[in-house]
Image 1 (cartoon, helix red, strand yellow):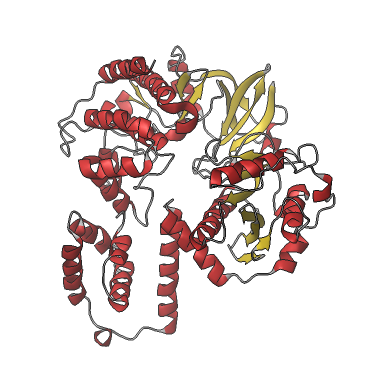
Image 2 (cartoon, one colour):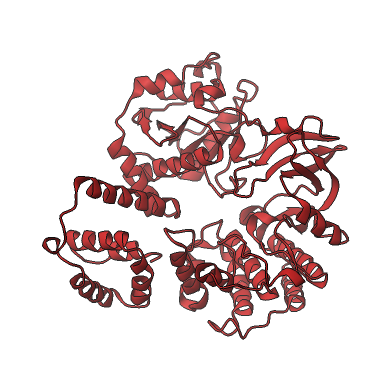
Length: 566
């Protein structure tokens, strides 16, 4: 189990007892971590006995003051928010199923209203399409996916958007978000350019699959509203090869749905016409407006804008574009202060595994900008395989070795800060890097999913921490694990950092828990190398102070693994 609330739900406690414990923890969040630790490694009977004892310490209702209606309502809100946060931090069938079930219980079908949203100015009739080559029967979800992609390909030239299969690769990143079909404005699958999405299942008559599909789609909607500032609504769909349902959500996540509709590729049905209308309609009808961030690039010498890679509300105020300079693919990064990054990249300019600055200056709005090459892609297990991933991470270690030799620590080694181009890995984003002489006084920073255990412990306690080689390589190990598991890690952010730290510590230090995580989430070809890498990172188990990781040795080990795969 990955959190205290799931542990409580899994045990044979009565509904009233379960509710009483959960409310007590919500009102006293400082107890969550202690209770989680107390239950770790106990069998279910022992957990139940412990929670029964814990119940005895909670005052009965007659012993406390009667809460006002407002207080009770506030508690209920906290419960709902907590449940939503737990849903959003997981990617399991159980969780998405529950989200979908909740949508169906709270949103009544409003077919006519959703149909009115999807009235196309340039409608496409099924009769005008050749669907004779489409298979009549699909045995599994993969075949259904291929059938839809083949159908969507037949619409090229008749619709303005791009429809991309993102079921197994090319998925959304920063943050990771998987959806079967992405409807995109442009050529790259990016949150800023996502018009809508479609979730596909083998069957929607299967209640679990039906609920799961809706839950996955709604989860992506939540991220869209966070990543596209000002977007007011979105309309997407869930379908199999004979049924479809359209889901509407506004920015407050108030939902409407069409109800299940018949979908046929051989005869005109309301479901098929609405799907064709959705794909051929004006993108504004689906709530999408193209980002305008690139307007600040007017007058920027030599750079031709292509896409928004990252918008300015990502927490550091930076804005990142892909484009071209002198016909060469490049990345432009803009921020109010890029002085530290420019300084670091100047010192490290002779390293072939670190981006090169080819232009710099000021935008029309006064922000600094730098243009760097290469413009790579983020690693994916299915696309790059274990060999490509090992090559890229070995190159990143060479970049770290070079930077450490020049007395510089990156301090934010993470999945999104590594790109791959022409069989080579690059370590990017040196904005929070520090010189060795400044490390003692440098503020803690990093991406919590990939931060080392010592850094996380200091984040939690507020105690200063001096970054070391151990921290940077441990972070790289988490990147390797993240890639191998397609972004599914059990320590994804919970209601508080301490819970995430406890889960991460448990998975890393306990061999059984680590193995269980690999079996459940990681591609099989990665298992051997993850196990070996873990033994290098944690040679003395929980004694983290004793270890002394050598980048040179790991680079050599990675080289041996790569040669074995040649």
